[in-house]
Length: 486
Image 1: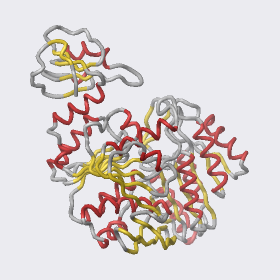
Image 2: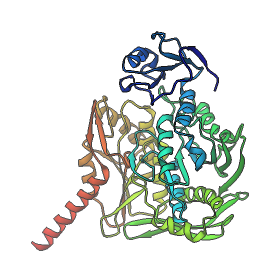
Image 3: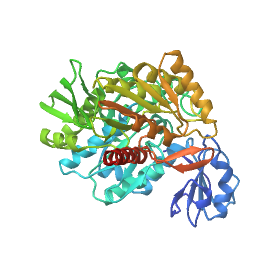
Image 4: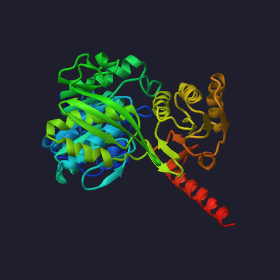
């Protein structure tokens, strides 16, 4: 990392690295980060008042001569290098696995962790749902945290005895340099579709694809979905060795003999893989995408000598919070909670569920406020074409009127000829869908998945789709029992 010491002592010892000036303390170093809403350079003097002994900046700052000022070209990249050095470069002590893609990152990371730990290899995880350091579990705020947090978590993993760490790597994390100081042993690509394009995200699909592709300039071995039509975009400029997985001929790990499995209250898949593994597998997660996620995980785990039997045991018991999470309501009814929160994800999920030939497929969903408006139309279109019936409701409306968001969704549903009702209160919407569920029906409650909150205005309210489903199932059961006795 190149830098220029503008003033002060560049050899001084610092007590901690901070990004928030209010957290400054004696001998700390404040890194000025430019964000979407503010600029850390504006708070340099405040950090010094709080005790910061050094400032790292890309623009000029006005601080006393006694304060060390280090100027760099990019403070986000500098932060990643500083954080790695501060925590003793913990990534070098473990096998590092990064997973990127539009869909499937969370499930694939869970599968990798489950398979490695089934083989006795303690593995840390950083992802959308939570961070597991091997010593504690922390609820996540972002898919990929800031580099300073990542390095602290990696240090905790190393101290807890983890031999590997698996990280969900978002396009934003790659663009913002959050994994800049990590050399991944394995990089995994799941798939690529149009998403995360907007004023606060990527300017175009080309930019989105480019940043995804940069993971394969930061890893030793790239594991690629051979069937994905965008794989060449992802491989552009790669510097790693490449291995592939998929259903198509030519994949290093190839799936076939695919079957849908339906048990009381549960959906799953059976399939066979050949190549680096030759084994028949069963996974208790529905959809063909489950095969892709499992193969991606297997392609990593073969490098750790994980056996086929260990893989099968992991797949049979894995459950990912809020990802195709299923609840039985009796009489061959399946209630599912899933994170599908855009048109692509909802289309893939409903298409997969259609393959189980349900007597009826109902979808409960809304769309987040203050986000790309096109998501509403695309989700409405997917539901209209693939669900038998939709219950349109609220999902983190933020400062937008919930009914305005719902109107956008229903406009598209009506244009596509879909059947629906509107119940703006999400709790009531879930209760309605569960109470009207018939034998052989699948009800999917989409959009929030593992989330435990609902954002209305500036207020964050506790709300968990899974709790609401369980409460609704229990209410239906109690009412049925009451009527059977009277």
